[in-house]
Length: 465
Image 1 (cartoon, helix red, strand yellow):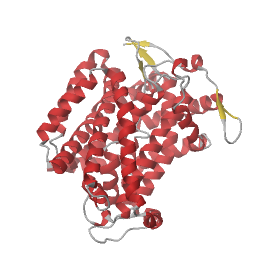
Image 2 (image 1 turned 135 degrees about the vertical axis):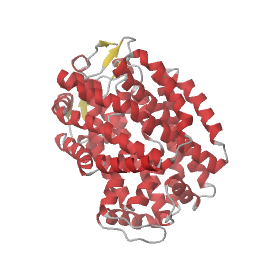
Image 3 (image 1 turned 135 degrees about the horizontal axis):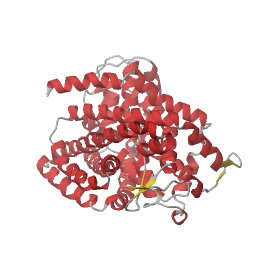
Image 4 (image 1 turned 120 degrees about the vertical axis):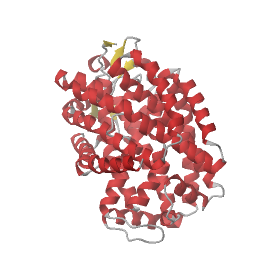
């Protein structure tokens, strides 16, 4: 086990090195510039579109709202609680700043990958819409690039068992045992039963569960976090100053904090930011490709909300709570740090964090099961769906008993391996994103714009196995 950990650390040092960070941030910056910062300028419009009743004017299996909730179910998870805490402990308060930067540029990445996913989506032999990086690589770049789409699907089908399954199961088992004394075996059994029951219904049942559970759990966690911040209102300006300063200058060791260089703040801020919002990984577009939508642009504007909600809102609540309460100086880490930070202000706050983490992780398991399923379907056809679901359920109790450090390392590695093919595809297909955006969005004035629905021109419906 020690040898495996050493290998994973060595691999992570390579795949999460300068080239990967430059690639993730570079693609986001490039698309923001090429789109004239449209994802940021039209953030309000995205929220308006989210609640418009337009389902009858588009094709797909699930509503645009449920598509976003399914994507959020996969992104709002342990990264928002344990991941943020780990980033701050390893990189200092400045890591939160780099998480924000990753999210702001990641909105353009998420917008672009969703536009491509809807533009190049297909229908399988059961009439279900399927899409994602493997399909926009195949249909957008042509036959000579199919190997790249296959590579993404291969990494995605494996990565799901790390980032979306074992990591989440491990976190649920740990937090329920430490907070409520629930035996890990019991947690594993319950996960197998509940997750298995949901997976039987496919994307429609997953999206229905996500559409109800994600808003409830997100709002509940935000309310608890805002109470903590509200009771420490005077400390917020100093916290922001510390975050920005620590993003560009080393932080000396103090209390239980070991100290951190600027590179550590960038490295852990970006990696944990990506782990949390998944911008650039190519996972969320798989869910958005199934949405009932009029055109790619409409769904792209909705999809980018996921990055904003996940990192700018939810992760910020966690990070600010840890910094304002001084929890980052205690030497604790992970979900334990977040729980103790909440408890220092709200009596029983660790129970709130425990429940939130369990719900976040549970919905992540559901969302990522769909991503992995579509990847394996791309590789082996619809016949592989049932065996994949079985394997997914079997992996849950295994993940619940693994070392958290090892699982996090594995998840980090697999994240990077998924991102590489997707970032290449976005870069090569960026002219398509630009042309579609220019064609379908017409600026009327500074406060409003019109979306031209041309579904027949932009949707591909191919019969595949």
